[in-house]
Image (cartoon, rainbow, N blue to C red; front, side, top):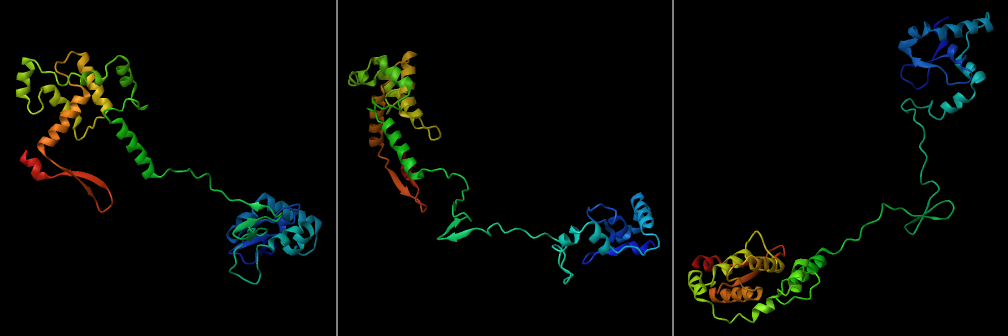
Length: 279
């Protein structure tokens, strides 16, 4: 009696149906298990109760086949299984058919339209508007050039400290009037010791302005000059005098800075090593 209640599932690998339990499932999915689990399944309370119910309702009758049991109790099971099982092929896998997402979509002129005729727009998010890198760099260079001009007093980008200095009357134009004044005897001795800069203060300012790894802007130099004056440093030149001395030193030394272009198009400037060593 035991073996007749198990039917092998078509196109399955070692799977069987229990016709006894399936007939008592009240329209639910048939009971399915592995062949190796038949002996264990026989000892379950569910299987024993199903056998007892079958014996009481079908006394003396042959055991029900799964097709008859399912057809009378759960008629929709086999029709659903037929969507997944191809009885003509043993290699097919029991997988549900995937719906075609573009079944009702029409493509016309590279555009997509739905079944209602409305255009479908695909978007991967907003693309930020990136500025041209070269244009941005040129704007920044123009701003730096204007800020580095000795007479750029109307530039709105001048820091507040420079504006405060100008408000207090600490403008370099006031010092330009005294550029041609003769220095004192003390400063004359100092000038001889710090030639060709003329003074230690001029030399230190020129050194700060030409640090290779710490470039200072004109506004920084102006702030340093203002701070030195406030601290009572003797012989502090004006910003205009510093630039004039630097131009004279460059002309006196005679080193020509040459512009070069790399194979990648990068611009750089170079002092000839022979001229530097000759110093």
